[in-house]
Image 1 (cartoon, protein in one colour):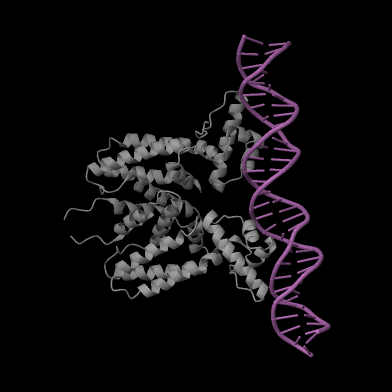
Image 2 (image 1 turned 45 degrees about the vertical axis):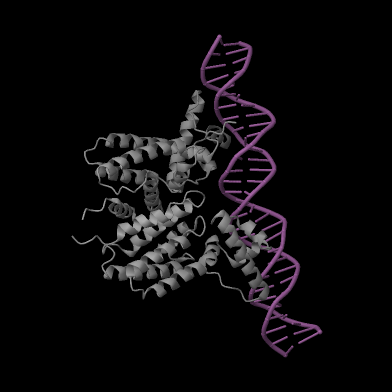
Length: 196
Length: 196
DNA sequence: GACTCAACCTGAGGGTCCCTCAGGTTAGTG
DNA sequence: CACTAACCTGAGGGACCCTCAGGTTGAGTC
């Protein structure tokens, strides 16, 4: 009947809100150190709460991930709006992409979830991803209109490049990090070819 | 004492070889449909063998993955050697990269394992990855020597690009597949800039 | 302050998967 | 045919997942 994705809402009762916040804090910490497949039972016990309580507030792992990353992605969208008026649309796009890659690789496994959510409605993070898609597409279009980015690049391709860069960054989290270089190469690859 | 990675060897006794092969065949099928984290117990039962037998031949999941993908990666290295004499070194590099991306994304989760193995000795797939690294580096160097690829690109960066492309391909396995386009963009991005 | 009840919490428990290991079986050799 | 190293089995303990029956409590109402 109602197959909309479950988006965790901050509950109404005081004890509910307390636990919700504690779980979220524990989850952020656990995701950071163990990746998106951190043990939910560990998170619950770290939050000082029984496992059933965690499931009450966050019925799926995806809904917990969504709640844990919502702020960061909201900031990303907000930043895109600020950048919309930038005098140099290519520079604006580049800066946004750099920031996006960092957010996408906040913890191991996140970029996979986001890539999944991007085109799969019925996923908790889909709404946020759609908003980001919009932001990225706008910045891209502006840079293309100014003739600064190859005109055949689509927003979907842009996000593939972004996701790839974020994945490389997340892989390299421990050790050699080639991701700034990766994005650099990608960026240099998508600028409009100079006129002959 | 001996912390070399465990590489599965084809066993000596006839029953051992039979089971080894059956497990490998079942594993290939399971990885293909369920990804690298397919259930080992399913694989064992699919092979008509008890779980202990699977662990006897393949003490770790990584060793099973290594055995299941060894052939494909060996082919990739062999292909590189054949391409070494290609008249157009850029075309040779491109073709090899296209093939590499396909092999890296044989099943979901493989490219992550390979990226891990690339710089982590003590991993079953490390030997194969090192060989591939060599192959790729040779083709890259040749294309650079011919002035066809930007000279500042390192082999490590090449493999980051390849892995990123493979990851995007593996993500999109079900549905929209942007991977040929991804690699295309990358390839166009790394060619040497035309002289002014 | 007592009452009410929806919201909330708990943790036992059944399911899946991981990996180990003690004990039984068998292929191949002399 | 006897011997043994190689091989096989599957029970079992541990981690994690997720559900649900039953108990507790915050907050509104009188």
